[in-house]
Image (cartoon, rainbow, N blue to C red; front, side, top):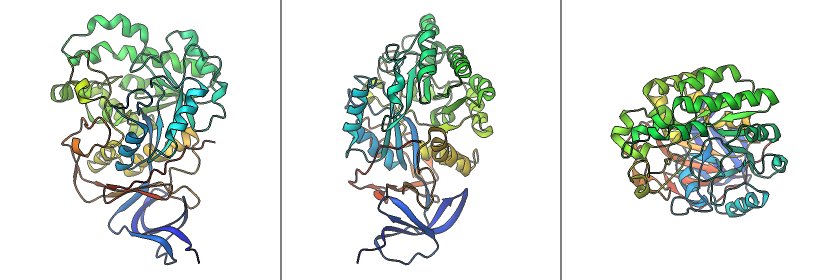
Length: 439
């Protein structure tokens, strides 16, 4: 007779409905079928998680896995491997690949590439361009599509929607949420004389607060005008946080652990071009302002903006050094570090990393530990210290700006769709990621 459950996890402290409760979790295939104390019915596999804490799997809403186009930096396979080692069970992957994901055919190619190769679940952004700004209806029923991504300021790759006419058209015509890289291209071009060769600290002078604010004000006004949802990615200024508080009905906000953990000029003095990203890490007053937005609910989601480059590329003299740093493997650890330091409640961490992405983007049956939901789980030893090192990083780039940082928790296991992806910190060869489904 077939066992009732395929996997039974026993004796863990589980994060359920905002509280930590000791419980067993029984899984049948990819679904949580029972949550209770002392489940003793037979299972194909039983794991004892005594002394460990189980959270809903983390959903990283902003990663660049560089495929197609740049496999020496990352692939869908290597990036997803890094994800599950850090407790991330689902990712939203960005369209600024080579070629960019800006047509139904290229989108289908991404899905085909991901099939049976990814350790975590996945969804892809459809890239907005000036040419496709009037034909975004194709994204309405597109399987595995989390939204439309628009670069208003140039960054890695060649996706750019520069003119106001087309920026407005993208927002007006998209049937899905439009997520925006918000830097004003005209100001970026005007400010280029502020770039100082060899001085990475001129990066946040060039890509100024005014540059971010001008763009964010523009997209908020178009969102309001057309009553269409806009999501501003990697917010880097206190000014944007203060401004966007009044637009919460129509504009949602995302920031990164980088902007909550690093500040200028200290991080540049210590790490140089390794911490160069777009939009940049700024002075401490901006980090404090973004933290305020996290704690008062202005910030809805935290995404890593995982954007790997090889170390050789990053160590080139500024501005030849490309912007971006890896982060999918460290996003949960960094936010748990902030929790352990008393900066944020655990419930807020889980809402930002698991629950809110599901609410905001309409992800079906994930983000919570609930009967009937997919069994996506992140398992942490909350009482054991861990040191983040370059050697631990599974991304093809093999480095992290947080090398040497100590965290008072240790990543232990990851379950994706009821399958063991990581246990005791060791990766299982289990590529069980599936495309996310959206309401």
